[in-house]
Length: 76
Image 1 (tube, helix red, strand yellow):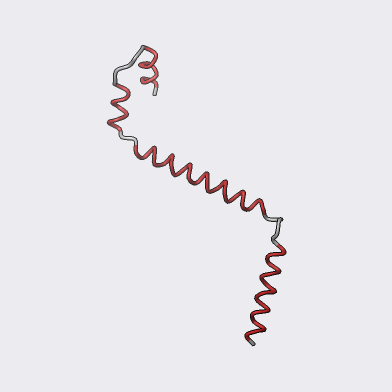
Image 2 (cartoon, rainbow, N blue to C red):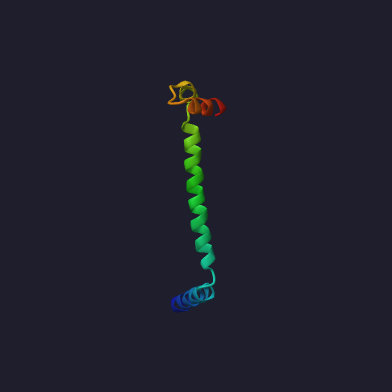
């Protein structure tokens, strides 16, 4: 009985490996792309959350090197 179960599992495993060999490479690429996008969006969320209102106001009111920088801060 144990031999029958082991051979059945081996046959099923071999069938799964043969059916998926080389035809599903796009799934790995998709997983990698989605993982990278997830990391990117997580980093962007942390960056937005870490912005403090007082720090942003300080940047807008801070000393500027020239008039163009001051205008860019006003429009920001």
